[in-house]
Length: 252
Image (cartoon, rainbow, N blue to C red):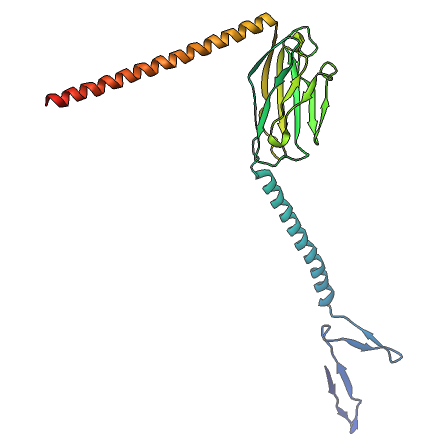
């Protein structure tokens, strides 16, 4: 913006002075020596650009942090299914024969190559090397079985079907040193939380095995006879009640 001013002194006119003022924000160019022009940016433009450059990275950073925090919360709070493992509480076999250790599991997840099976053994003999803690005797993963301890290497065989959730093994032949506890553990990611099943193996002599079988047979027969007696008694009571009711109605 320019303005002019002037005055006369003694009949003569003085030079006219032209005063130009420019606001810093409105000025875009200025004349320099030699007729060239030099661009001049407004004072607020660099500040605005600086604010925008620092604002966008902060916004993106906040979004990334929020997304990561949300994923962590979801993964941590996601309920994990507990796998159920079942095995026979006790197995009695004759020395020198084949012992079958059955183990099955239930899982809400599909069986995959990541599913693993571990069989451990802890001896009941204090002088055994397997007495203090369980040792791995068989490991199954990716559709293949891997024997563990040298003592069981040639005697353990996987006889189950993992797709049918059967992870049983057989031990052949059995020795007296096999007396102890066998642990069956299955991991089917993400179902990895569960209590391993345990089976007490008793290896006995032939005579003891025959006596045990005889005892079981006798106990089974006695139990069946007892059930038949209870049924007969219940039938007699029912017949007597019906007979008394019939006599009572006839008397009326």
